[in-house]
Length: 273
Image 1: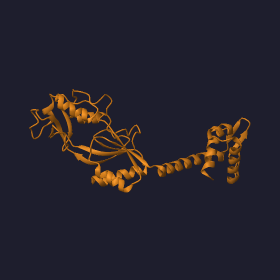
Image 2 (image 1 turned 120 degrees about the horizontal axis):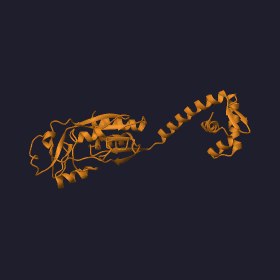
Image 3 (image 1 turned 30 degrees about the vertical axis):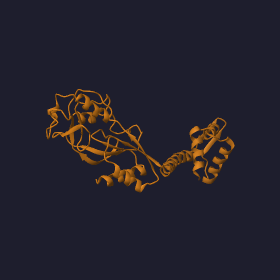
Image 4 (image 1 turned 30 degrees about the horizontal axis):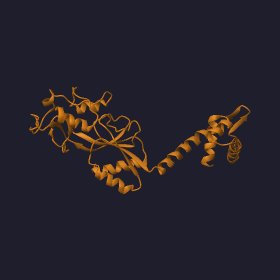
């Protein structure tokens, strides 16, 4: 049995009409009828009862339909895997991914890596909406339905202007900032994500979508934001927060695509997890 013949049979079995199946397959009807007849001869059984009104499946036809669809689905997955030469990676902020890029290129020099830089409104970087194959992002966020691995834990600090009265402190707590305006994310943003970056409380302040919007709002308006320690924010100061748990750098994905799995393995290797 050839896969092509099985596709012909599935079309006829689903349409229950040779004419409709031929149109669906972009074939003329006679070669389709001959192909199904040859399939029945090869299998030594009748698959279809033919009548002027159309066709009905025999018991053997029902069995073959079920098995053929499973086999064709598997064949399509194999074909997609072998043909796939691109992977789309969603990235939220800078995580020092140079080592990961080098590790993945070494394993897959001919694969095109497409980058989608996400804003602060979607910590999954488009993973849930199938815009990316894998996400290199930051937590915490709702991981239901996703596969995730923590690659690194980053301590967090308060982002302040250099002339802020609290900028000279060695350490702060979120309570020290309760009377300030904080960044807000748009309505509908992941609640776990929003709660973390608001220091665990409901806050008031401007709505932002991008890292640069946060930086500029601190610079111009003195708004309080949070950021991982060790990032160079120019004129701004990041003071460590004692009462906020670290933010994990996370790799997240959904399916079991071999190329995605290879990317995850490269990430684990590059980050030393």
